[in-house]
Length: 229
Image (cartoon, rainbow, N blue to C red; front, side, top):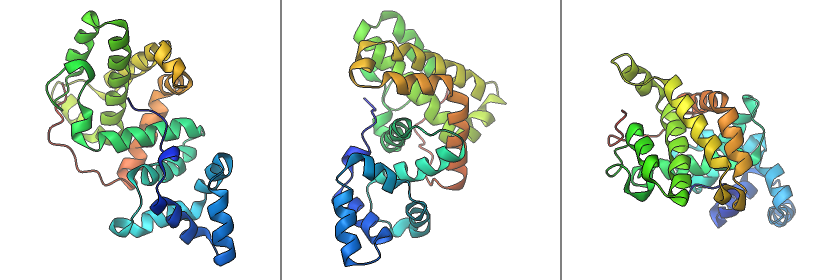
């Protein structure tokens, strides 16, 4: 299950990167390392413009975790688009981290074959799903719809001109399933309900922000195994 835990999974290399970029001296390094252990202060530090610049400038030489990379990058872009929630940013960073590895895109409960995803098949699977299976399927449909329209929007638009579903179709399906998932107990128990509600209500805005990030900053090779319906 994708959840908002990137900031809780920062590695020693991530902390070293932050300290190296922001600290002016040894005393600053020690103070900054200590401040990073406090969640509220850590969040403020991760917003620093210098970290975003360093992520872009370092390129392939950057030795930080995927969760740190995606969080810093998306935090900057999402704020530019008026999306200020750190929890939503954290969730989206986790989504990119997970779905950038195509083997992690497999639908829950065996719906679909491997990483080949047909949203129509996932929607049909909802008809026979148990209550708990329904939650995971709906969350996956929302995640998948947002990922392919956010990162691979050009491909979706190209296929729509040949008769495939367009971006607006995926926006509607994704938003509806995030909204349904938000009402499930699992979402409430894992503090995901507010995130799903924002993803539902602002699906279009968040999709456009991801388009911006993908076009200008992300370098994800298009997974050849992704098959759009």
